Each structure stands twice: as structure tokens, then as C-alpha cells.
Length: 225
Ligand code: 5RP
Image 1 (cartoon, helix red, strand yellow):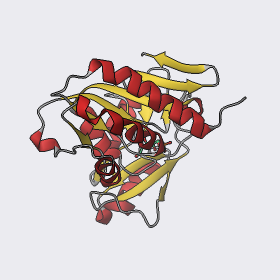
Image 2 (cartoon, helix red, strand yellow; image 1 turned 30 degrees about the horizontal axis):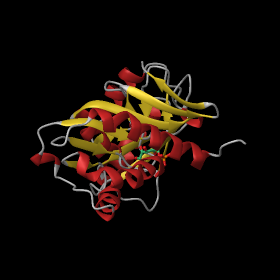
Image 3 (cartoon, protein in one colour; image 1 turned 135 degrees about the horizontal axis):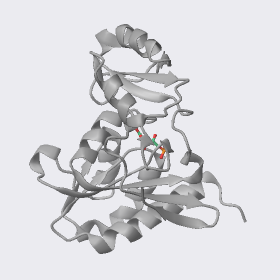
Image 4 (cartoon, protein in one colour; image 1 turned 180 degrees about the vertical axis):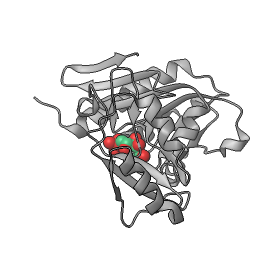
């Protein structure tokens, strides 16, 4: 029987448990992502809460879910080292460069990624693409700079749309940039981040995932760049 997208999310969440748990020590810290796939992982993680020292969450929403599971959540500033970061993605190319931020948590996700030894990405096969950009690229912006940043993004060939009614955990706005064909993700990530007023953008290319657990109809593929 064919698995639906929710089944595949649960499958990759279980695969992440199987990947991370044998490799983590009791004193170590896990980074936790945001979104429906990460939520499946959080639900399964409760059973293993004594196997590690605690977590750092990439959003207020994930922090709440982790606490509901009785899992310790730490401030990133109290933590020296995160061994694994587990998170979903909106798109992954074959180099494991990602688009993230569909859940508006891209900045904290990028910060936790930067602090982590290994980024384990979990995604169903609908996220696997040869070229990034079909999914609109989220860009977090300081609210007063929103229209200025939108004009600059148009110069780069995109069509930014303000994600109405969404304020990020950092008190900022999101522009979703449609119509970008992202042939050079590393350069575009830097170009967008250099626009004054941008907090960060959802390209995870300079720091891509280290391993992708990809949920397919024939099981979980372990993909490395
Ligand atoms: C949140 C994210 C998510 O990882 C991304 O949107 C994928 O979400 P989901 O697992 O719900 O498909 O980047 O900011």
C-alpha cells in the first residue's frame, strides 16, 4: 500500500531516532528543528529523554512541544556544543543544499545549524529536487525595511510576497520570493544576506545538511553530499 506524506514524515522521524540515538552520549545536547516533520521527531524523542543532557530548540513552537514531552530545553548561550541538529526542509538538492523557512523559523534554524557538528535533515521525497527554487524562498526582514528589501529582491529576478499575518519569533516579517531559479545557491545566499534589512534567508547552502534521511515509497534512503 502506498504511504502518504504523513506516513513518510513518521518514517523519516523514526529513521532520525535510529540514526542519532546510538551515536549520542548522556552528557550531550541535541538541536531540534521546526515544522511537521520535526514535530514527529519530537514526539518520538520523549521516550529517549534520559539518553542525552538536553536540547536547544529552533523556535518557540518546538520549545513548547519539547517541554510537553518532558525534555529539557536549554538556552543556546548556555551550551558549548550541539552534536546533532535534526530538522526538516522545504527542498533539498543533490548536494543537500536546502530551502528552509516554510514555518518562518529560518533564522533560529540557521543559528542552531551553525552551532551543530552534524545536521541531519529529514524529509519526504516530495522535497527532493534537482534545482532549488520551486518552493518560494523565505527571507526574514526587519519590518521597516520590508519594501526596500522587496525592491532589491526584484532586481535579483524574484517576486517577493509578504507573508501576511506572520510575525517571526524575532519580531520580524517574512518575504516569500517566487520565481527564482537557483543555479548557484551559495552565491545567492550571500547576495541576499548582504541586502540591508535582511536578517537571513532560507537558503542553507554555505552550510548544507551533512546527511539527508529521505523518505521514499521503498524506504528511507541515507543520502550524503
Ligand atoms: C520551518 C522549516 C521546516 O523545516 C520546513 O518548512 C519543512 O516543514 P515540514 O516538515 O512541515 O514540511 O524550515 O521553518
